[in-house]
Amino acid sequence: MTQFLSRKAQSIEPYVAGEQPMTQVLIKLNTNENPYPPSPRVAEAVASQVGSLRLYPEIDCETLRKIIAAREGLSPDQVFLGNGSDEVLSLSFPAFFNPDEPVRFPSVTYSFYKVYAELFGIPYQTVPMKPGFAVDVDALTEGSGGVILANPNAPTTIQLPLDVIEKLAQRQLEKGKVLLVDEAYVSFGDQPSAATLVNQYPNLVVTRTMSKDHSLAGLRVGYALAQHPLIEGLCNVKDSFNSYPVDRLAIAGAAASLRDEEYFQTHLEMVKKTRQTFTEELRARGFETPDSSANLVFTKPCGIEGKKLFDELRKRNILVRRWNDPQISEWLRITIGTDEQMAKVIRAIDEIIRKNV
Image 1 (cartoon, rainbow, N blue to C red):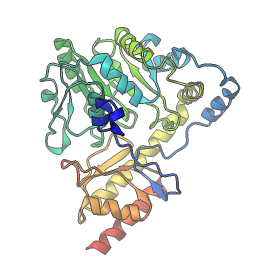
Image 2: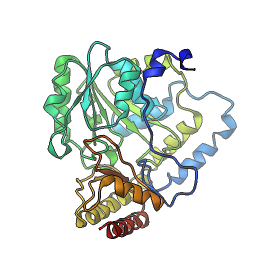
Image 3: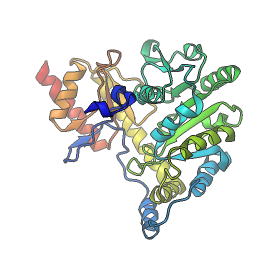
């Protein structure tokens, strides 16, 4: 019955999200969720809003924007809120990129970028990676259009320093084009956020999610940081699509989480410590594993093919992520769980390799 679909709906190749099984899974490490629950304050804040659900939420999310702005050293009119960072990213394509100028991004990065470009009719060019999955910074800015850069990059987990981001912003500014930096994992790295450059560069947009670092993947809150004219452009696109993208529960829960800084920092450090231990265990087994600046590791197995290990882990109810892209088909992306979960993964890997020698 595809004759009733538009040509766009018939031709688009949608993004494939990580599996979300409804059955009990031993260890789920395939979608970069935080292994720890959100701040206890979140539940209290969400519960307090139940009696008001008959009312629409704030149109401009002013309460939450003020909290984020204060945290980032910006003004509230430099903050845009969306229903998760994926929505913020999707709205960014029609807001900042033109159909006659290809947007550029690395060849190994968040695969949703290609989908957005195709959906909104924006041409794109992928820039080949340098050895070791390094981003070719010079090549990124060779085009005539905008640039998108995930930093830290996903799934490679590699983070560029702030001075490199500033160089990209300056080059794009000289062309009169936008640099969009997707910072979904920035809290897990050791470099300052590009948000510190927002007041210097009128062409810079920084996007964030609260899914990973704040353990709010199920609540869906994302945001963009930029100078007001760019935020206004995002608002224009959003209001042409949905005037109320962030609901009352999400606003209340996100605000409560942001106010509990001690809980946030404590659990960030727990994830980082587990990541370091797990990375050392993988390297001790000959797995090629770059230093990670995210709540995941990207690793190339030793002594077994990537797909084989992926399948064998799945048989043991351990879910990780793998792609068929030839550039990374031998690599696995493994989310950082608790110490206990990661120890079980290592034991499973040892068992699998022994049986396949």
